[in-house]
Amino acid sequence: AVWLDGRKRQRDGSTLCFAKTNGNKGFGKDIEIGQKTCQCCRTDIFVDNLQKVHVAYRDIINDSIRDIVHLSSPDNGVSFTESTRISEDNWVIFGCPHTGPSMTNSENGLSFFWFTSGGTDGVYTTNLAKNSNAFSKRQLINAHARHPQAITLKDGTTVLTWDETFKTEAGFINKIGIQFKSLDGIERTKYVTTEKEDCDHAVLVETNDNNVILSWTQRTIEDEVSQVYETLI
Image (cartoon, rainbow, N blue to C red; front, side, top):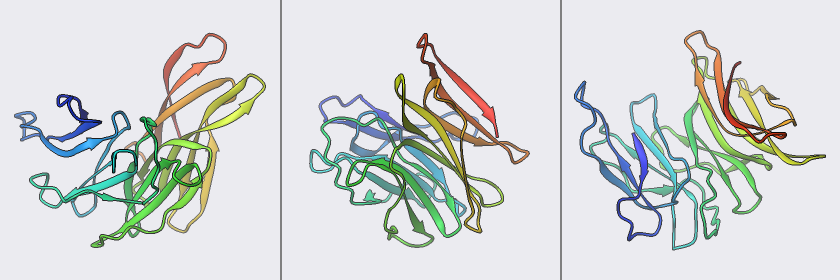
């Protein structure tokens, strides 16, 4: 597990902590693996096909740049590499954008998805090939999306979800989009919510029968009640 920790309040930003379980004895002592992270952006932890532990989070660089960085552990969390930017977006923002990265297996290694306003706004992706320390050049997926979350299905299909801003007669709302990309490169995109609701922060999980459960936070426009919804895709 990784989390943003506020015990060392003398620091700007949060501390990134890591801990792991020891059989049925619960979690052991936590360790610091990041010392000056963006205060609120969701972190991500992922174990790849080679059993290497990967962590991604939004860092605070040179006091004002808030870009996504990556570090990994080849020994099941005993030690971690130094953090490396997955893309030099150079997004200068004096505050937390509340949108963190997501990682998942890809055909050639590990794929990353994140939001930035460093350059053109939007959700981007990059790839870290197996046994490589070099990230591919970032690619823009959607210029109106935020809060990406991704998983890879057993057949190699990459599933990506996000919330996307749309202008309506009542104002601006967010809809939940989901994209399936198969190994042969075919992409299918659909939206699972309507313009009658304002939705964000979707998450994904694969079921045992190769379906996808999608869950998100939704507020109705009329009464502004906020609830968690889910659907099977």
